[in-house]
Length: 435
Image 1 (spheres, one colour):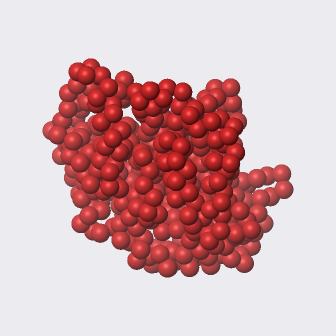
Image 2 (spheres, one colour):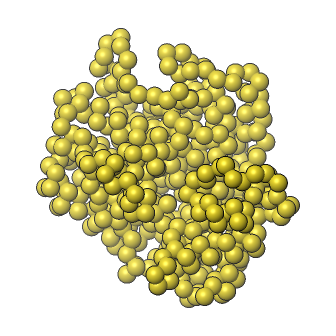
């Protein structure tokens, strides 16, 4: 048995885990293999990222081959072909006009990168006062200081108040239990975007705001689906006032809604997109930022022969990560996996909304292949009921994620109806046992 003492685990109740470890030793397609040999269905693509499924042949082969050919090369004034190949492939998938890619190693790094890009872009153009960022309540943009500052998940922020950036503000979230049990995007609520122009801009003045950053569908905040027309309103207001609009597509990107990016699903084009997770199906860390051509060209014209953007990471565009990305993108294309959320949409929606009337359930939400149910919190123990559902489902061979008292579903795109039936059936069985 491995010694559990020395590893400080992230986002984990460490003593609780070490008292009863959930130890994964293998994975294939839709399932984990545990240390005792049991199989567990992965109902959240692990952390919203294993879109192509686990240990898929093309991805494994690409990583193995690359490890023996070129283990590492820097992207600081040198390069290797795979990084350029992945950038081209990502740009081809992105909305029209967003065609330049800057690589990071995670979604958190991508958010801090895009914030630096936004401020530098405005400064180059002679609008150096634009340094403020507008996020959204319940929004999640990673765990680095910049991303946490624009995020709006209280439990993630409370321990770091004095360390967070001061030049941020937050729009109200779009979650409203008066619209509970809506299937897909709510028909009402677009007017919540007007807060940007009616409250935020008068308070800070548009000339001081660099960008608005939102997730098209909020994931780690509890799977919050935007009202119809909400994102378009944000786009129109940002355009009117010269503010950049950033979509954080770390979760929504690479097929989750049946399109390469959620911006294409909603028909709203931002100025910049952050991505990670699904680009390699979680196999090797890789993230990045996609920007409009005019933003890239503004930087390229700014410094003559010098460095145009003083930012980057040692492992930006890492060869193994790029190989994994190419294998993943090939898998998506050859198996037409971006079509799966469309093909499974009805069954998935019916499964999510089958919980209406179940014990403790006060809302069901869904879009594409992402969804959640919301449970009534226990008095004085917020999150305890959701965590109990997670643990009991795990014991019965299904992994779903607790987000406070929300239970989230986000299966790999290779899932079949039988997997959905098992996932939703297990949750339904567990809910009947939760006090």
